[in-house]
Length: 287
Length: 110
Image (tube, rainbow over the protein chains, first blue to last red):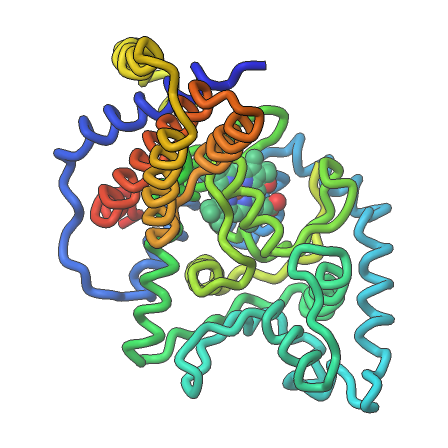
């Protein structure tokens, strides 16, 4: 197999294409206004899919038409994430070796709190995602951190999402320049083209939701994290937010960042905030 | 998807250009290990810059690995060609990241 000509083609085309588009205007004033961003974001999708209410967007590709929706209803009867949910529930209840448990690390014992993650920690000056908070909880109690892309982390977040189903995302961006910067960084990451294929997250999930790419229907970016973690037949298992971010990066021939790197945390912060008001629906199942 | 197909004519043109540029190197005399080391170091430096901009390409990494493999089997002509290609890919990714530093703003939903 010889990939080289294809690689040459793609990279050369990319160089020329960006040169040609370099004349485009770069956008107006750079003031950060999360509330206005969220409003415009939600408006874009509800206008693009006028039959859907905002809350309908939380089931990813299954949101988009009646046929897909019917498939979703059928799947929910025997949900393939059931196994993970059970595992998460057990893991969550089982005390650490020091006798404490996950419940001790979270508000309300960790039940029904998924909608508040990620949050901006003003002491640390950084975004804290649920996956990160879970591993910090483990480490604070003398346990080794879990892989961010494997089944155990998926199981824990599945259980926490399940206990929060129906609660609207309630992400806060405090009026702190560091929080505003994190939000803006996440937005930049979301819209920045990268990888040899020269795609941004937005190229697929804003400009082409509902379009098919290989065998898959692209999920709309509105509500795109509400159903996480997800079971995917293609993975034959569960995937965390970290797993989805890294795999979306590799499929455009970009080298993924470390899970829970600052960029991914900020990206999750941005994407969750612009879906404020939409209900948590996780865990989800996908074709 | 639309954005790919629109680039096809540009693709053909660009391909001709790049193919010319890369084949011309193989007309030169056989490459040595030192040539490879120099070419590889340049490719790695460019890829490191792409890493600092958080935009490395998987194809750069794969091509760097091919270069190394060719060098290990003593095929320095091919190793140098792969290393130059990796450098071209890495430079394209640096160019992309630099360009996107402002260009992303044009895509934001308003």
